[in-house]
Image 1 (spheres, rainbow, N blue to C red):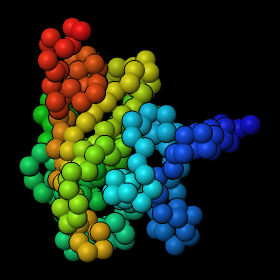
Image 2 (tube, one colour):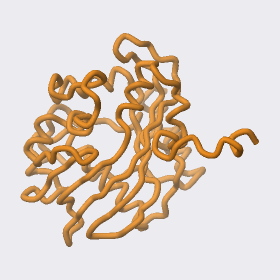
Image 3 (cartoon, rainbow, N blue to C red):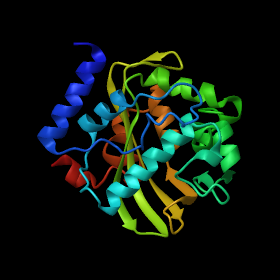
Length: 245
């Protein structure tokens, strides 16, 4: 059995055993989709998602609807060069920002890529988004996480039109980052987001809040990866008395 067939079978087995559903990114086989390069293959990413996710949202729930919306938007932003063809956004209104910094328009965000506008909030000595192109920013993290960089929605705190939710991003550090070779360590990132949507649930505005510096320091080995586990970079280490128990 080929590697691709093996991954596909493992996905089917996990879906049947635990009732998991693969993320809905739309019909990627649609011949009319104007891909930036080739059609993306999300099998590895979905397997990482199945094996590492902490939530299993009910079909049709607001949590699953929002999670799929974000995953489809990420797919379109990464693989469709013309933001006006994205089906997940209101192209006339869309703008995005990280940590209260500059808002990037649909055209700007599609040109520089998600990594660059999200990491524009990071310290420049850790990651200078102005020195990276769309392609180079993706190459950095593909090299670090060759098996994918999974994302899940944790909780939704308010419904449309202003959807507020928490999220988790994770990967196994099996590649290389700034010359540092990973040993398969789990690296996690947590945060919050506010997605303002219209009546058709198209994203008009996206605000993301997280601690990019902590993530990048952990990638460089400047702080322990454990500092990021279970949301510690967001919520803190917790009560020292309880930690000792």
